[in-house]
Length: 101
Image 1: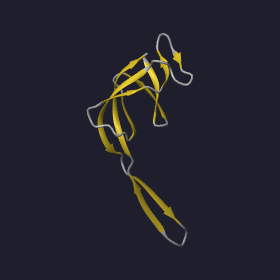
Image 2: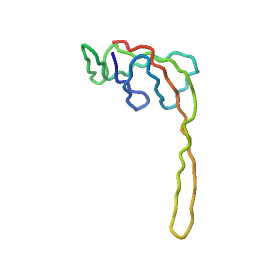
Image 3: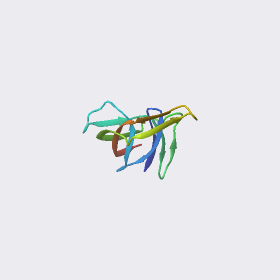
């Protein structure tokens, strides 16, 4: 069974055992998080939410808080100057333990 869950404005297709990186959440490493914004449950009897599936939730465990690889941003104006900036986005790694319908 799999589900489509909304976390901080982004949608993710998840199933038990998956590890996903989402935008930074304030939970500590090792805590369990219940996500109740389930938009779709797939499997033998699929359920589509309007907008969410009633009673469905995804249980996940926080396994890591970190920062992504650096993205280099280069701005250049012909004949004038060049600016180089870097950006590292914070993320939270979640391990999906179960999808409850």
